[in-house]
Image 1 (cartoon, rainbow, N blue to C red):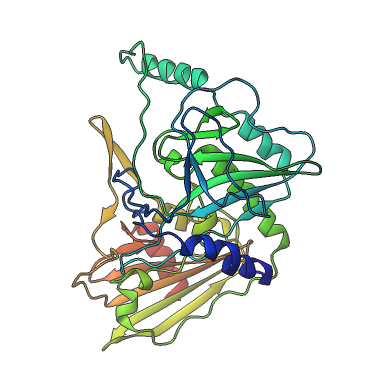
Image 2 (cartoon, rainbow, N blue to C red; image 1 turned 90 degrees about the vertical axis):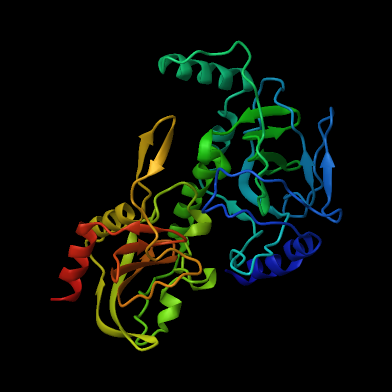
Length: 389
């Protein structure tokens, strides 16, 4: 993070965060769960009621308080003006802080990200979001194609997920004030000046839907264009075994990409270096017994790692079930003791680094976040070819 970003994180954002407390939803585990928010009176919040209210803004154009508007109607027309736009900022207003010691606050939580390239594309994406009537038509067409009956009136509801932040887009112009689009992930809406548009449904809407994913894709490109040379991480020679067993969230694999990933693959940006480290348990430590760094031909490696860390699902009844989930290596209290372990450090063009742990014994699993995935044979064979040669 640049010094100016640090100043911003320690300045206005920390002052906003210090005034609030709440419950942090385990989004990585229960993205579709619902439970009530319990924010204290100190959290500044405005209910729009029947009127369209604009939130108070900081000097960066980001809201300092939140406007709650549960409406699902609004006039046609673009969400934001397109002419003269110079930047788009993804704002995060911190509205709750974690109480569970098992969790650690996400690094840079509440720090805005500003996009200065691809701004017209981002504006077009926001203005192309469906109106309520268009969203209803899409739902009816989808249900009809699936052979399911479609009610005359489609009910609209909101979940009650306790998000740690509220998201918005602040569009800045060469002349005139910022235009702020408020995102309601519980209601899957984007709204400004009385106009309401809909985000993608399902889990995508929980993460901000299509506009946030589009923003993050452009933002990663912007980071890649300005990032300095990235050096691969060196293998630790004797890390503590308990730190590799994911018993506490603070010991989960490092993941600098998470903040800018959205719904993309685990490694969404081309890699510049990959280091593989092989360990065997020796008492309370893991001893390094082999390592290798790769710098060329990394696209197949990225595809292999993305496949290994992805959730694989199968339709069952009216929903989906994970078919590659495993309790082996899962974060949280447990008794599993790792004996043999490979660690893969992947550095990408943006300068971010992600750690992927591959348990070999007493069980086989890929741990790239909070959950364990069954280790595919292709990845195990690749690691053997790199580290046993």
